[in-house]
Image 1 (cartoon, helix red, strand yellow):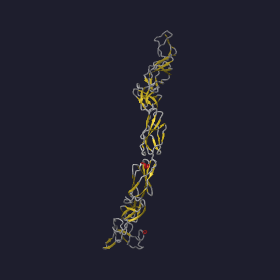
Image 2 (image 1 turned 180 degrees about the horizontal axis):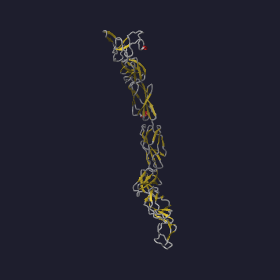
Image 3 (image 1 turned 60 degrees about the vertical axis):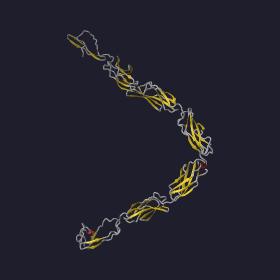
Image 4 (image 1 turned 180 degrees about the vertical axis):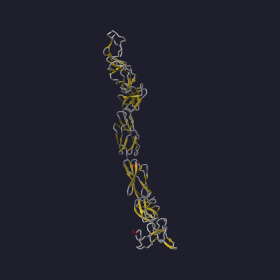
Length: 612
């Protein structure tokens, strides 16, 4: 509570100054005389609004390429009700927002641009403007409005690409990239001065779509990339390229078909073909031909096929193709082909003789050109026995051949056929018989012991049977066993003696010739000894005997030792039964080992007691 007068006054009015705007005050008057003071009631009064007090500069909370967030504190002395705030951007009014807000997102900003913001708070009586915020720069963004490139080409394989920088950069240019779409060329140097580039290694007479892509950034941020609209172009034509050779096929002795494919790179319009032919040699001509090695243009047009007729028999020709367009021409590689000969007039003389029991040598004379009416392409040699026919192809440069892998003692019919293109002629057949020979390479048999009286013999093919095996036999100590087998397998030999050494051989027979392998020695398994005679005894005294015996007649193995047994028998009557074990019977037979002790005429047993 504040006293306004330092001493009483007689005035009935007073002006109060330096009050706070938009503030409530209570006032009362005190009347004073010599008798004392009287207080009036309190009177409430409100001062009017005024413009707000000072406002701090706004804070920038978040910066993007095209917007930022602004925050501020309300004025410490609002001096009334703040009805709204005005946002100033670079000294220009940007937006007006309600007075209750303290944050604003400024949109529609320009990328990579410096901004300063101010906040102005307003009451009904006026406004107060803050000072400027710290300057901020928005982030870079992709460039905008890139003009289409300009193109200039004066060669079939290159083009000069020129362009302008984007109308709106939105950052610093980091690179330009030329899309054709292939090749793709990136340019990162001299971005402000060099605005053109020569693209090479293009394909002639080819459509290209050329686009420029500009990429921006700033600081540590990447703005983005934007492509221009495409500019279309066609590279200049040039002479054809990649001309493949023609394909030729002799149909008969006077017709050859020729076909070809268009060039993979025509490089222009108006493709036309010219087919050239020259004669290289004509062996059947009586005199050298006049047109030898002279090129003739036999076809001109747009087709991909030509049938060349009226040619000479057994004559070699060369063909090549010329491809033209509006710029120039290119020719293919030569292809050489020979027409077929006529029907052969005479074959060849064939002779044959056996080299050994499995091979025959065949020789023949080389026919002349007139004999076969053409060039020999190859020989076809065939031979057969009573079972099968075999053949092989022999080069034309040969005049002999060896036929191998034959059967001994077999008659073969040999025939030689001469091929000259589409025609052939056969020789007279020749009969040859290979000499006979026994089988070779019969190895000693493999044997498996089954028991003391049986063995399993494994039968295998000879390494060189020299024919078909008709029978296998087994020899046991030179005694023959018939197996009745014609193929490899196994055979069991039985009724053998135990622990006996045998020599086993295998015999392989082909027709009337047999071969016997070396022997395999093997011993049968051991068995129980047999034919053992009883021992004979000599009485030496009242308490000693001499016992003699002989070895078993059939030991059936290696005798490891002998075991001598003795038994004592005592007659017993029905009355002399065992007192403790009646269920065991009336008599007990004891067999005692020679090393056991005997008491008197009895043999001790842990379970029974025998009475005399």
